[in-house]
Length: 340
Image (cartoon, rainbow, N blue to C red; front, side, top):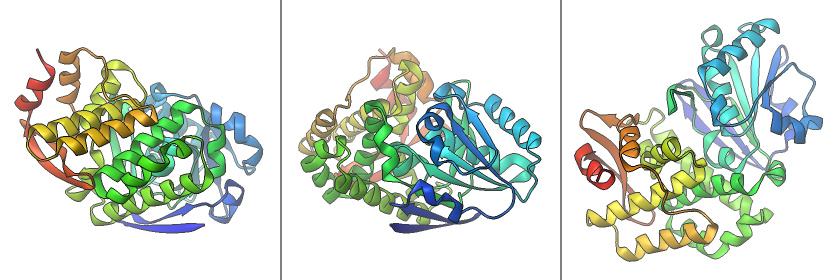
């Protein structure tokens, strides 16, 4: 097991890579503990759950709303959870985001931690202290920065995942390599097929390296005022694709990365060769590099992105593989790409 530490304004967060779900009780305090999961995770892993009160949510992006948070508040009241309570989210990115937000706002904030059950949440969603819900279909429009006390990343939990969930995680792993680590990108070019079969040595390295990258960036810039914006590579377009085309997160981010790479080439930053390598790797993994969606609707969604500042958007471009930069791009320049 390897442990990483993130130093946040709300406290320190410990990310345990290679720890097992069965050891959860080592990390929770004595007293009232409430578990939050979804029906899929409960179906496959309930036999490993410790005996604490349990809140079970439905699945899918559609549940990531204030209505779900309202339901959690009601259940916490029913379980008589007070300010000494500890909440554990056991699931993927959606469960972790909702749990973190509910815990951060219930009674002005109670302690919480995560057991991350998907590749996407292990390499990205559960790490870094972003918690929130969607609003009127727009991604993470309501949320807080607050660090979980711990995140358990058990590779054994990944074996029950469907292929689309593996691809969601792989898209974020590619993102980490593209923005920060050319050697990791080259490793992915060589070992992507082993990763897709969940080869234990390959997956543990990819999770480990991704958390090294993300935790390092978050320790520099927890509240996304500078360096942390690099983690949004592919997500400005990706979230717009996700909203308008209804595609899975990984597919949307993959197409978003390909689009951002093409824009980097257009702006004279990225070579055609490096853009082609990015596109080829994504396709080899089985991820799309384009998404069919109504162009005007994509731009309308993009205008509501959280990274917008007036008539510009903080946008992540590439100077090369492993070299991300953040620039403010005029909305009119992006509009030219998406509106006929």
